[in-house]
Length: 367
Figure 1 (cartoon, rainbow, N blue to C red):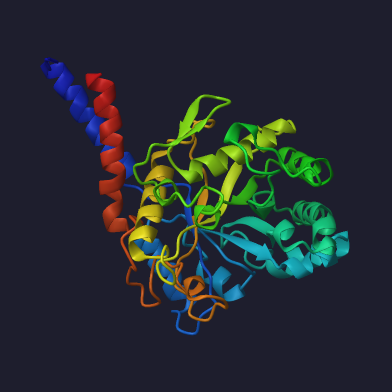
Figure 2 (cartoon, rainbow, N blue to C red):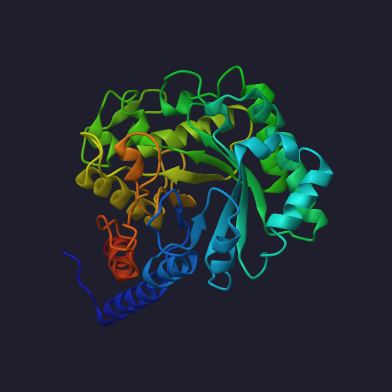
């Protein structure tokens, strides 16, 4: 039995107060993708005000450079990441074109709006357009140089990758980049990230990996399950998100770039549209993901690591093409009511983070 003296109780109270004060501020590293393929969304200023006042998100990512969105987030302290469309990649390999792009799309908004990343293209290897693949790194270098020539030092250049980038199916610790791109594409790209101190951005979607993981839905949704053993390291994985992140880390490490930061550009789960796209499943995935990111528990190969993460997505988008599930990735409906409570509303944040922090500190004190 543990006996508490008055000094123990005072220390406990002090720790609880410190935890509360620290955790009652918005959670860092948690952002959201703000898609706009819909005809019923609120205006960007209304959306910016909602995110700032009602949610714990500290950043948003958009799939273009919409000036109305960039103006709406001015002076909100919410960072915005913008995207260069894939089709524009080949045109930005020259310094002149890149400087013009920065002058038109970044300079007018920079400083008033906290622009965090320029994401040059989205999932170019998945879409497999040779002109976009071959010109991606030259375009990234040109845009990075253009930013510096404009005196902008705090905007980072990256690109987002779908996770079709690995060489076959294997345990996380033995994952490697595809042989056809490991040396020609990923090695120079990762060296660019290391040199410029910019992150390697990936889009891990357990939803799209169900076939690869034997349709193990509990494993995909962070639900209790026996886990999957990595026989090479002896580590057991209890969820697919951790496995995908550690596959990325292992592939990067295998070519000598495991020190480059990893951020999550997209991840989420649809709430309607097929037997696995349900509100309960979306709540399980995104709710547990939020707790994981906020707590900073990391993964088996990257313990205590808090990944910058953009959840997909903010709203259901009623004009997205494809199956019904594509229109139902949102945490919120267009009128700002939640599709389900994933723990991202500001009035629920202290409870989620406070409980996590309190449990850790009680364990430390009472050990």
